[in-house]
Length: 113
Length: 217
Image 1: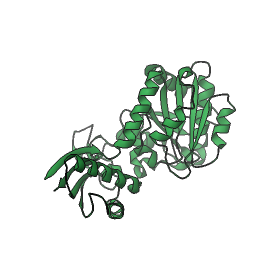
Image 2: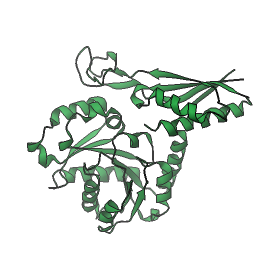
Image 3: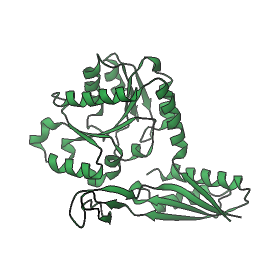
Image 4: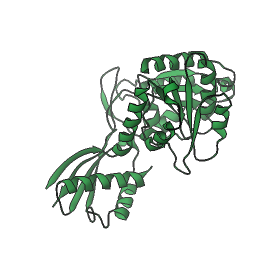
């Protein structure tokens, strides 16, 4: 959801940092998107292709590193990856746990020249 | 050459939310963002809370809807300052919208601001407003599987209010299983069982709100 405004934000952030670095062109934008954020890669790519022409990011490669949702069981300390919305600990069947990863949503870095 | 960025993608909205927060802190106002699907009882809960806290806190409301002033009219009838935001199509309130609404409220005379977000279990979660508290309402007729289907909102909130408990005899809603699942996903969450229709559970809910408002003020 909101991949349009999200992609515009990504572009703004990337261009701002590229300008600060006095770059002429952005070659790649590296995003980190956690599984719990619900954002869809294809939609981000779609809007990126639509809005990047005419900017420093035109032609840049959009690399999205997805972070799986990792949960630590509060009962037995086992760590597991959330799959198909199954919040049960695979070791002791307790419900849920502490979220260790999966909520990330940032522009990690850009590659410029 | 690689340039490190490490910037949150939603930071533009977050920065305005922080500005809102600073303004609200200056006036010692506790802000509660109420989220739920359409028809779960956001307005009803706000109206019940107004009544319960009338003699203890000075309250105002910001109403968020795509269109109409239906909800704001009901709040205005309680003689409480209210601002209606019509988003025109946006499916959630955002920090700039709240910023504009705050300019229309008597901030120096308020203790608690309740924000009724647009009816939606998905989008409001990502857009900070400058709130102290996030609350979502899960009503009994909606079924007890919503945490599986919409995990983000259940993880993000400080309280989950199970509304319409007066309808439990007529719908499928396993309250203990629901509570276990939500607490498993969000250990700090407070869970309340209320009926805005009959008034059941409202006193305990309002007591918690009042405590949070005092803590924030």
